[in-house]
Length: 545
Image (cartoon, rainbow, N blue to C red; front, side, top):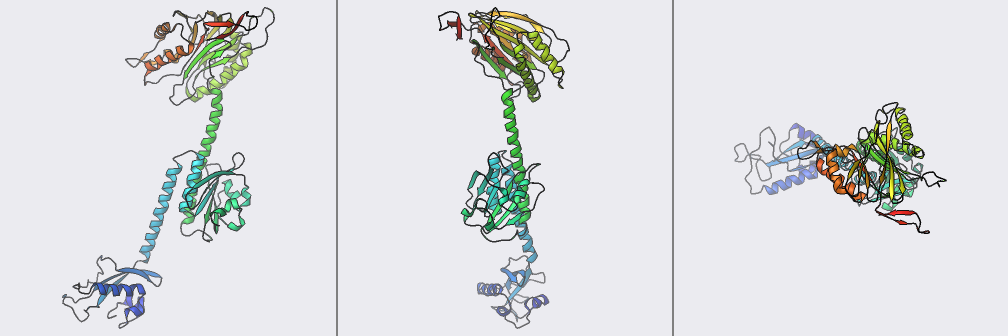
């Protein structure tokens, strides 16, 4: 060394005349030899001024003591570039720059970017699905890839056991249901409770049961249990496993694990809530959906129902079928009657559907009294007035009784559009029935009409969603009663299924893309032919299409 500043003297602890290989670390001595060899035969460059290497790339970098330095070197010449007392083949000037803090910041920045990328990836994948199994699979896979060598996600008990998703170093996820006791693993029971949140707990894998330690992965030497916090409900626990021994998290690992677990727990709890709500909705929907039609006590039936909302399955319109009671009738009493009900609740959507369910249940309970339509309507009206709802309903009751080859109907309208009779020859008749809507007035009135359907005749019950469907060439004209009658005149003798499908198709085409109300209709048809009973060939038997 021929020249050193004070900083270099303090760094190397040497003075002039010392040989660089004797006082400098090996990486700097090697850089000096390499630079000298490369500069052989190359014109030397003038030494920079006091400002240092002026942005030149470092020749090498490495530690000196506990610090990290970048070494910038260049062949040394005199000020005029012609050489000088210090110039020569092996003369080199070195600038050493302390980059310890810079490298630390770079490492922290890289680690933070990696953490941010993981959390962004986790958020994107977890929020892409409301399926609990999918959320558990994503959580296990990402945890095994970024947080540990293997991971296990344990959800709260469901059915006979705990759903568990496991992922090893190969990235393959196994999903199964285990009948396990969380108390077998220290800290797991507390983590499964979710609240109050507990910090990750380190567990000796040797003390854990096989199902938790996952010894099939090669025998982990470190294991931690973390809570998956949910939104107001337990979401489960995350078990992390490492091949190498460790006693705790390093750097920002604990914070990253906490943030990852928070996102996974939120997604899993939302998926659980969604699954529970879906199950409840399906259970309730089962009772709200219209019944299937086909036949009722030997009478042909067909129905068509379309809620106003494109994605809705139920709404404010409804219909129901009640077969005749099969108790024997003694003496001159008339044969028992079946009952068909078509109604329209004020409003649409879920709120109207809930009231629809209440009305249908009430009518089901009142069916034994259906021989007296007025009494049934008064009892239903009283039930709605005593409830907290402010909605009302219009409906039509149709009691059905076979009489030989004909069908006798007793029809009562309560504030509803009157039924239409479509004769087999295409003639369309109105039914003279009317009455008060239900759920508004204390005293209601109604009139009942009796109609006889001959073979091939049809009685059509429908809601105002058909006639008030707005559309047409100008976009705002209603389908209307007269247009419906004109179309029904072309439907004489049609099977009921064909008739309701045609009316619905015409109304839907009329509406086009416009918004429409709920649409419901039901056709009651007297079969064109019937056969005699198999016993003695006497009397009417069951009707056939």
